[in-house]
Image (spheres, chains in turn red, purple):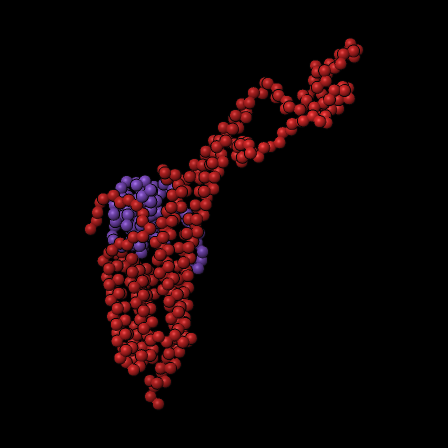
Length: 324
Length: 99
């Protein structure tokens, strides 16, 4: 029955009931229980509880048929032209339950014989296949939610691209800072730093011919004219006098990265977080995609080992069936 | 099967809106979906995807979607229904965070 109320939230674990799921689960559980009960009864009462007994062969045929149906039916339904909405979902549920019931029955077919033979290898491959399927279902439940978490980090609340947003803000900061630098008044000469003498001009040199010789020129010029005056130039260091030089203080706020571009470091950090979120999203999507490939490869391996085991079993069975 | 295809990441809100407007409502994506259990109409899905309250069957479908991408190939217009479903997932997630 459809509800038109507003739904919220995205829990990690949830289970939705529908008719097909209930039917497939019921049939699957009853099949496992029924065959299990028969197995216990037969193994206690029979004198020949072996894989090559009549019951053992029956279990083998039923189990193999179920596993084959599990692998084929879903693929056929997926490729069918005519289908209704929801049929694929039901096919997937049947695929899961037929696989579980098939592997259970094949375990019963072994009657506890796990000698290193083709049948045991085929059974192990089948167990690995079922486990990969179960893990795949868990991943299909967990990873899409994690993808949504990472994708949410990469988008703003309005749904726009957050990286683009940050880039625009960074650009605005750079433009603003550039304008601030350009607005620095060019009319006033730059004040010299402490310890650096100003560049000489004709006025400071006092070049006024013979009349100027009697006066000591006001020298604040560069070192090449220092010999004219005996006064120390700022570059000369007198011994014993403490001289202060500019040494960058690592504890200073100006030494922090991004201090000279205020506001940019936070945006850069945010940008890195978004990029990391997108990388994680990509990894999760790859896991979803390639786990399916692992499941299919294990299925192919299982088919190969099962065929090998069938060939071995038929090589034992056919001579006993043929009349001499 | 073994040929690697590029993984497409999420789409932004404007991109999802563009795709929703381009949808012709042929239902091919829903027919191809193995996660959809109960029948829903494509119009209702499109309407509730972008904004507004999300009804129970749409929310259940959105949570069940496992981003397999089976809905992308059958689309005759070349839209990405999986990206639209991811948008729905994000809305459900954010509603949980806001709550």
